[in-house]
Every structure is written in structure tokens, then in C-alpha cells.
Image (cartoon, rainbow, N blue to C red; front, side):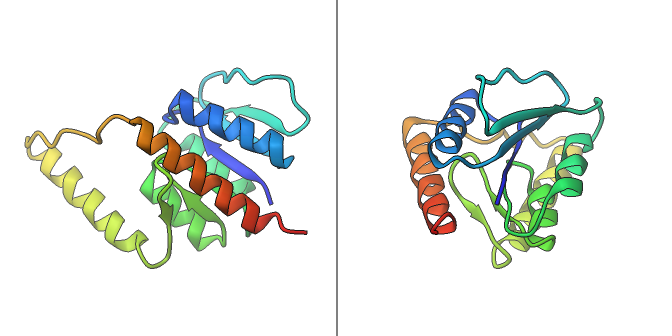
Length: 150
């Protein structure tokens, strides 16, 4: 099992939580972005810088993903592709994307995109708060503990 991070839009505080968890559990973790990502020296951490462009990082993650790998992303279409490929997906608030909820999330995303395209100001997601950070850390720890049993 590996962890893949859609790092372009991943909040720094969440990256830090992922780094600590990867080091603690000794799980190979790769941050994929179209800009350089600074990581501490590590045997388990790496970064891949892809060319700029729409979905380039997403496509790179899907190309390298193996069944059972975990992807951290806010991108719902990417999460859908990950689930279809047999991977696991979680957003930076600690919410798991599942086969049971991904279609509803895609429909809502598309609906909101249609509203924005027609000029309706929909706002965006609320900023991450301390509760979101704690929830992400707790959910990540639970998932990694479950998946990394000997």
C-alpha cells in the first residue's frame, strides 16, 4: 500500500499530518503537484513534479495507482477514478469517498459548477478549522492502522 497526495491544493497543515503519519507507519508516500514540493529528508517520502495543465497531476496519480493505495484529494472526479481503479480516497477533512457516496458528490459538484457558470456566486468550502484537522488526523490514523495490520 502507498499513499498518493494530490498536492497542488492540499493545505500545508494536512501535508504535515500526512508526513508525520507516513514516517510513523513507514508507508511510501508520494506528493504529486505541478510545482516543487518541499519535503523533509526521508526514506518513505517523495515528490513528483508534473507539467502545468488541467488534470496533469490527477492523471499521473491514476497512472501510478495500484489497487489498495490511498489517495488524499479534494478533487471529486479524481476520487471517482481512484475508486474505479480499486484504490481508496479521502479528502483533507477526513471524509472517505466511497462507491456509496461518490456519485452523489459528483452530481452536487456538477450542479454547483453549472450554477457558477451561469453567474451565481456559490462561495466555496469553509476554511479548514481545528476540528477538521483533528478529524483528518484521526481518520487517517484509523485507516492506516486498519490497512497496515501484519
